[in-house]
Image 1 (cartoon, rainbow, N blue to C red):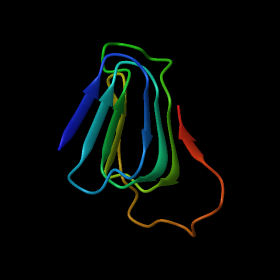
Image 2 (spheres, one colour):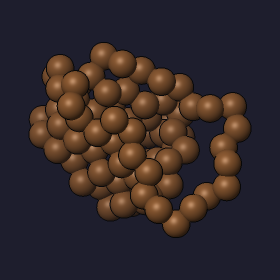
Image 3 (cartoon, one colour):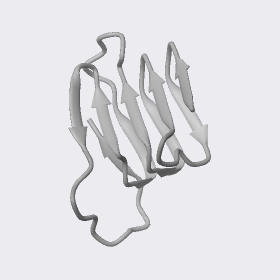
Image 4 (cartoon, one colour):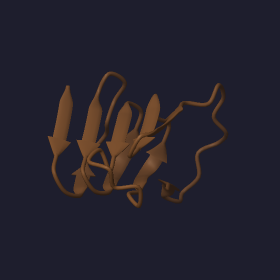
Length: 83
């Protein structure tokens, strides 16, 4: 499933593997990010991605892409942010 918005996105819930969220602005996930997130798809290099649990398959900000690490550390109680 794909959810795409022109501006900022505040999602209350999880993005599971196979799920994708795309925003022209920032992405804030009050839940787990285990799928793909693409912030700033319209060329916004200042966009950020934040999630309560950050274990994505792929992160994209503007045209910059990063894949998931091979191993995740322990989960903490803090939000995590990619910028």
